[in-house]
Image (cartoon, rainbow, N blue to C red; front, side, top):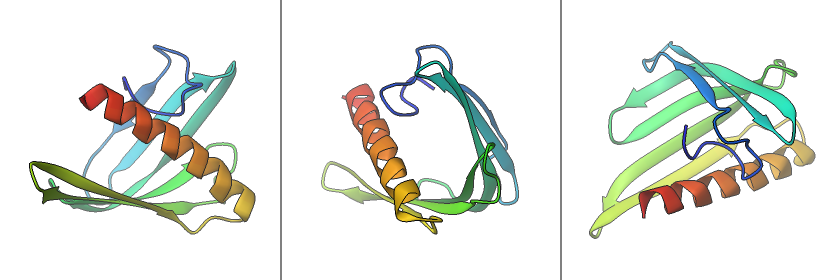
Length: 113
């Protein structure tokens, strides 16, 4: 919760309910730029320390479900994270998520170093 979301996420606003198992659901909420945001989905694949696949849908547009796949593998003295978010309804949604995920991954990198 310390690094989730784009840089506009208000500190201390992130809340998460997670049932991390195949078929389990998650819900994450946060405030950004004064707006309430909530996203959720279902875990489709869970391979500890290797792979996580889950659906992704905003509470405001549940019919716009997309798919996130995260793979992690050892590389040198660290790890390589491969992130893929697919099945967007349109280019605008894709581009918006690309900005958000890029900011999130930047926050994660800062958190880990």
